[in-house]
Image (cartoon, rainbow, N blue to C red):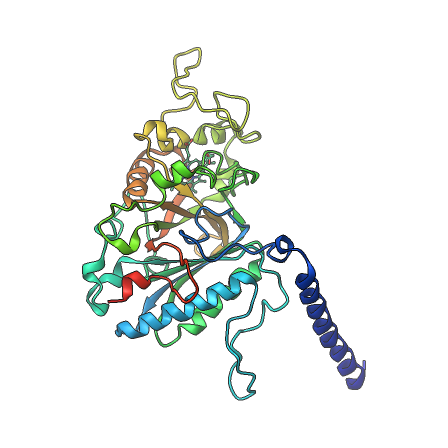
Length: 409
Ligand code: HEM
């Protein structure tokens, strides 16, 4: 191919792209309202999107440390981030009207032409934000303390903590990545990225109409999760109540993130009967070992012919079930991840990037103290990263911004 014809070809592709973008816009413009918003999740609402809204297929998660010590910088960051997140959620580029060739474009561009793809962007504030730097110590909710040491965890400090977290979920990995990348770029000078995690497949369902996905151990995951249409359960277990000590967190939620490495190779050598016993469920159907269908309620009292419990004493679901934890429930919204090969062992570095939302971090701590000490699953997993973040309620009107009630005097 000559230089000339290659240029011509590339030019043609470029033009084609523009034409296609134009058609997309025109179609959206004349379609009925439901179709124009198809694929877009509402940004505004009493609660932030990305918690009880249907779990999307992909995750890009980032934890940031604030490097500025000025409250004004933090306010400006939250304003800029909110406007950018709102635009990206609609499928629009990061706002900015400069077309000058002398400055970088307002948006990095890799999501141009892609639909909103159910993008949700959710923010949370870590305990560290409430130290002396910004005068926020008096606004720290009593519940927002660094997580205590938990059984068997071996946390990597480079995958743990952070002043602010952003969870971007989408059905398109490029749309989720684009959101994180642009917020990191807009935050430069005020925040640095501390750690990130990509997730490639949801391991929970939060909508009643959603099929239950499978985790990397091959089990259906999310069967007995809190679902978005269960308003009573959300109010009781997920949203911070109006009685909370700090007004700004009311209607919000606490996000716990745990990077959980799975020891895939030994798991793959375990016999099926033991795999089922570890969870207390049947791998193929997802049914509890005391039932036949996925949605059958587990019978924790059932015993076999020899008097042993059918769902073992150390089975994951027995230890985690609300029936055995004084009614305690959490909303799980995690993702499968793989970060390639563990160079030290040559084994897969893969697992579950566990995310849960709860009205009080104590719910997670209580569950994990039990699971970390007794769960049969412990032979095959290790918690290697961790974060706790207080997610403020949603933005309810134009011009408002994330965390306004926290940072405005
Ligand atoms: C790699 C780690 C983990 C894996 C592979 C895993 C997998 C599963 C699976 C397959 C189920 C059964 C289906 C369902 O109801 O969703 C389940 C249930 C559950 N898991 Fe996990 N899980 C993990 C870690 C955790 C952690 C860290 C917690 C909380 C601290 C947790 C809390 C729960 C709860 C509350 C249930 C529902 C139990 C019930 O009510 O029956 N899981 N998990």
